[in-house]
Length: 164
Image (cartoon, rainbow, N blue to C red; front, side):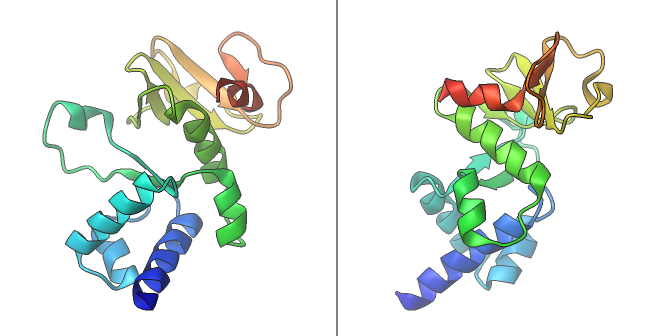
């Protein structure tokens, strides 16, 4: 039992310090020291326990695409509890996914960070984030940290906290 707990802690800590698409399942399994099959089980257990959020690539809904999924800690409190150096961009994305994930479908996409309810493309970033990554995408928005008031399609990230 103690070995499994140690492996799960190592898995959570590794995800905490990594950017969401930085780790492949193979690399993560090697880092943690388990087989791919065991890692998939552990990810599922941690997802059901609301310690991890597993977000799939949007096109995987229709095709068998071998694109990796994004793995996030379930909420930003876990970042502070599990690691000293959590990436700020990842923390913003964790917050956004946590606030919308309970009542909305969330996928990740090539352009933008998230596809919400199969309709809205959202790019998450800081106050200086531009529309460059989501230009010409209908129903696209910026969810920006460090701003108090939004304008047009630029929405303060903190406002998504009211959706929970």
